[in-house]
Length: 121
Image 1 (cartoon, rainbow, N blue to C red):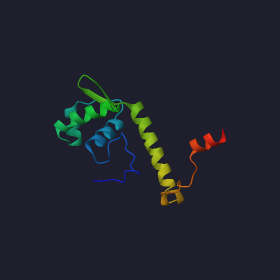
Image 2: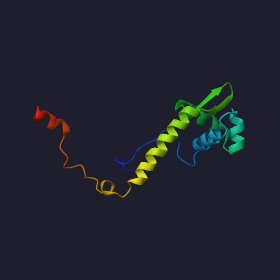
Image 3: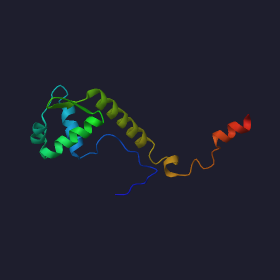
Image 4: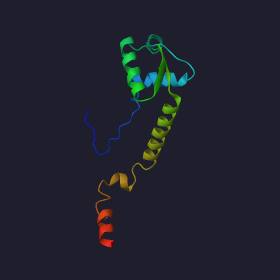
């Protein structure tokens, strides 16, 4: 699906209603426990083959950790990232539909700060 490239802000968090998000939320609800991929597959009704791949991707992003065959949430990384995502989302919602949001060219007449600095020297 195409997106407005200028307004698109990707996130490391998996999108809602994906296996990655379901696994993260489940592990975040059980931060002191480690689970085998087969247990996650059964608990979340996700195909076993998808769980292993998803866990490896989440580990690359730093959201989960593992010891042997057990996987758990990386609380520090997940909490920090989630907090920043929620903060950015809150700010975006607060200023939605303001002058700057409705006028894409609001900055067209602003002076170029590099040019101004060279002129004033």
